[in-house]
Image 1 (cartoon, one colour):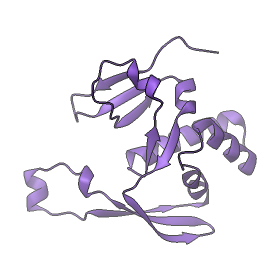
Image 2 (cartoon, rainbow, N blue to C red):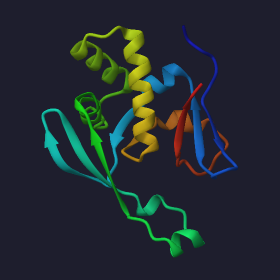
Image 3 (cartoon, rainbow, N blue to C red):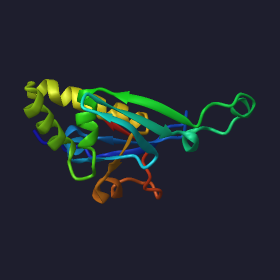
Length: 154
């Protein structure tokens, strides 16, 4: 079922993040790509240990200057997370990742779509992946700056 609703880009006033609102079909056509701000510390058969440089994502505030916090965050991915994360290479669309996940772990399509979409959104929120967004998806918006901080599935 095709939707006539187009993607839209809005800037949230709270954190000044640019959120791209997309339809389900548009979301499935996006290509997730691993962040350049992370390092794989340990790779095991049953998971991954990642270290993310979060210094560039921190807001410069008085509190942060008075109470220093680490510039790196360690994140452990389990077997399912590792499988999904490794497919985020800029070559696979979300739909392709869903199909590979479904075939490997023998889940229903609905279960897999929901789980993978939520997981990819979580990885994006934690700065582990970004999105390769087709130019035509952003061109229809009013924004001059083509940078997108977050994807929202409508």
